[in-house]
Image (tube, rainbow, N blue to C red; front, side):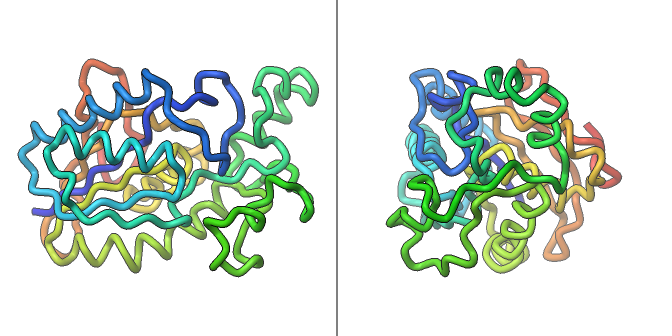
Length: 245
């Protein structure tokens, strides 16, 4: 049996402020740090011998990983950071207050931008200082690969190759893996591994700081079960033909 732990970072400052965050490198709040440490304790209590960690290149995911590993007494585990695990890029909405954006554009339009599967928000202009091509952490990435906006579909398009080439082979080789990422990159991952439909994934919310433990049977990665570790929180799995809550 092989185990995968999926963990959304703890609460960030812009989560608290109800702003569109996306690729903006926002740090954790005190509550977010506490969530990350609790997640680490929950993961330690599973007794699973995790072998490696994968995170995005954004500090709220990286610091969540560090704090969790510290609680697990596993700070020595190899950690791979990759931009393809980043949050969905919110384009021109980045940094805007969600309530104010709804007031300006209408709740229906904002809901489409936030929750439709394949309709992205308005893109950033090429010369916008927020564009990732101006960020040194993406200096080695071809500009054509860097998004100016994304839908959940295009987020999945970049996450899936990383899953297939970096995470899946480790699981197939019997290594248990922790992935610390973001609400939408994890939604994309869960859509793939659980076989969730385009429609059913739209209203599914990934909780901050609550590890989801997914167990597979053997190198073929047949799904056995999945459950959130913090049972005190009422988190539900997405509707899926592959797993039941």
